[in-house]
Amino acid sequence: MPYGNGRVYCDADSHIMETFDWVSRFADPAVKDKIPALKLGGAGAEAERAISKAMARVTDAEKTAEIDHNVIEGPKGWYAYGAFDPAERTKALDDLGFSKQMVFSTFAATQYLESKDPDILYGGIRAHNRAITEFCKHDARLIAVGQVSLADPARALDEVREGLRLGCGAFWIPAAPAGEVSPGHPDLDPVWDILSEAGVPFVLHVGAGSRLLLKAYEKNGRPRPTDRLGGGENIRIKDYMVISFGAQMFLSAMVFDGVFERFPALRGGVIELGGGWVPEFLRALDLGHKSFVKSDPNLQLLTLKPSDYIRRAVKFTPFPGEDVGRMMRDAGAELFLFSSDYPHPEGTRDPIGRFEKTFEGVDEAAKDLFYSRNFMEMFGAPALVAAE
Image 1 (cartoon, rainbow, N blue to C red):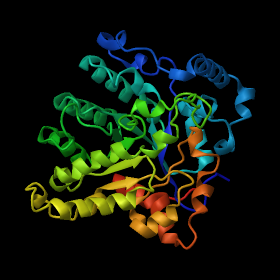
Image 2 (image 1 turned 180 degrees about the vertical axis):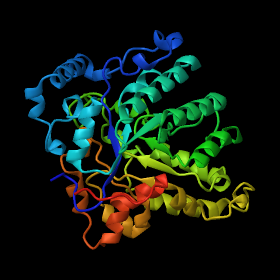
Image 3 (image 1 turned 90 degrees about the horizontal axis):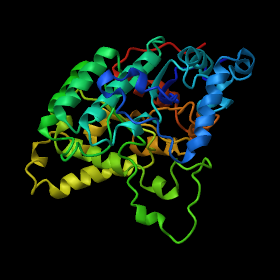
C-alpha cells in the first residue's frame, strides 16, 4: 500500500538533488563554460562524496533494492530513491501515492542567479529549465518548476515563453525586488499577463530572496552553531524567525501595486516558507489599506479588500509541525497546501502524520482542500483520482 492512500494527495513541494553537471550539460555552448560549478557551500567535500556515492548506488541493483520501498522513511538527500534519477522518481511517486508533485531544484540557482552578467544569469536559467523539464517529462504526475528572474523584463518574458514551450508547469521567482524596481512595475506586466493566459502559477520558495537576516545578527560573541541538520547551509533559528519576510514584501507589492487587480486570473504559491504568519498578514493588509487609502491614490484603484486578492490568487505550504488546523480556523481552509519536501529531510519521515495531528475538529471537506483541491485550483486542474 502506498504511503498516501484513501484520498487524493497533491504534493506542492519536492526536489531534485542535482549532480555535478546537471545545469552545465543543458547550457548553450556560448555560456556553458562561463557558468560556475555546482556550489555546495559548507557541505563541500562531504556533499561531493555523497553525490559520487549516490550515483554509484543507482547502478547497483542490490543496494537499490534496499531503499526502493517505503521511501518516505528511507534515506534523504542524494541518497534518497529518486533523488536525481527520473525512472526512480516515477517508482518513488508510486510508493508515495501522490497524484501530482511539483519538482524544484535544490542548489542549481547558486551557479547563476546572483551573477551580475545577464548572459550567465539568463543562460543559467534556460539551462535549468531544460534540465528540470527533462527530469519531469516522462511522468505526467510531475510538474516541472522552472525559474525566472525579473531583473530584465524583456529577457524574463523570453525565458517564460521558452519555459512554457519546454513544459514548465510553474515558475519560481525570487521573493525580492525585480532588479531595481518592484515586481508590480508596469514593465513586468507582460510576464504576469503570459502566466495568467497560460494558467501557470508563479511560486516563491525558500532560498532566492528569503535569506534576509543581516549578518551582524550572527555576530553574538559565541561560536556559530550548525544548522538544524548538522551542516552549514540550512537555516538557523534567527533565519527561521524572518524566513517569510521576503514573501510578505513581495506579495504586498503585488497587491498594492495592482498586479492582482490587473490580472485577476493570476495564481501563485508560497512554498516552504511556513504558514503560521498568513492569518496576521491578511489582517495587516486590510488594516494598512484602511489606514492609508485616503492618502494613497494607488490604493483607491483597488476594487477588492487586499486580503481578498490573496485569497483569490495565492496558496501557502505550512511546515510539518505547524498547527494547520488553527490556521484553517483563523484564515480559511482554502489557503493552505500539503507538501512533503521529498527527498529533503526537512519534510520529515511522516509529513501526513505530522499534519494530521493538528486536524482535530477539521472536517473531511477541509482536509480535501488541504491535500488536493487547493492545489488543483492553483493549477486550474480537473479532479484527480485517489491512489489505491
